[in-house]
Length: 285
Ligand code: CAA
Image (cartoon, rainbow, N blue to C red):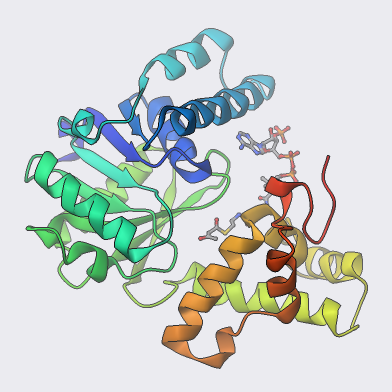
C-alpha cells in the first residue's frame, strides 16, 4: 500500500478523538466513514465536528463552503462493514484491551488484507491489540493529541510485528493530514504519556499537599516552562477519568512512580471529570 492508494479512511469511535481524526482526514481531502455503535453517538460526533469546523472558519483557515464540503466527505454509520472499502482505518474506541481487540478482529474479517489498521490507543500495547489480527504487520499506533484539529503532532507507535512499510506509511499518512510525527517503540505510555502522566500527577500532588494554590501551580508551569496549560488545567482538558485510567495502566506495568494522585481519584469518584462534566479542578459553564 502506498500513500497515493489511500482514498477512503475509516474511523471507528465517534468520540472526541475519533471525531477529530475524521475531521482532519476530511479536511485533507479523504473520503471518511465514521462508525460508532449507535446513531446517537454518531450524531454527537458530527456535532463536535460542526463545532470545531465553525472555529476553523471563524479563524479564517477555511471558508464556509469548503467547511461544508469537508462535512459532506464524512459518512456516518453504525455498521462495521461500511468500512470494507477503507485503505486505512483508525480505531479510537474506549481504552479497554478487550473492546479494542474485538474491534480489530472484526476489522480484520471485514477489510481488505492490505488495509492498514491503526489504533489511537494512548497506553495499551499495540502488540496486544494486533495479536487478534491475521496480518499483524499492518497494525500500527497512530496516537493523535487532543484537540486533534489543533495539535501539531502525532505519535507513531511500532508494535512487535509492525512492518517497516506500515511504519513508513503511518508517517506519510499523518503528514498528509498536516501533522508532524515522532516514533516510539511499543512500551507503556510510549513517549508522551510516559512523561506527561507523572508531570500531571505531580502537579495535582503539589496542589493537594499545599505547595501552592491551584492557580499558582498552573501559572508556575505555564510561565516557568512555556507550556500552554499547567497540569491541573490540562488534566481537566483531557478528562480526569482518562488521566486516572491511563495512570493506573502505566502503574501496572511500570510501578509506583505512576501512582495516581489521591485528589485525582477523589475527583473521579465524585463524578467531577473536568471540562466535559462542567467541573474538575476548575469550574466550567
Ligand atoms: N477545533 C478547532 N479549533 C480549535 C479547537 C477545536 N477543537 N480548540 C481550540 N481551537 C482553536 C481556537 O479556535 C483558537 O483559534 P484562534 O487562536 O485562531 O482563535 C485556538 O485553537 C486557541 O483556542 P482557545 O483560544 O479556545 O484557547 P487556548 O488558546 O487556551 O487554546 C488549546 C486551547 C489549543 C487546547 C491550548 O490550550 C493547548 O494547546 N493546550 C494543551 C493541549 C495539550 O497538551 N494536548 C495534548 C494532551 S495529551 C493527549 O492528548 C494525549 C493523551 O493520550 C492523553
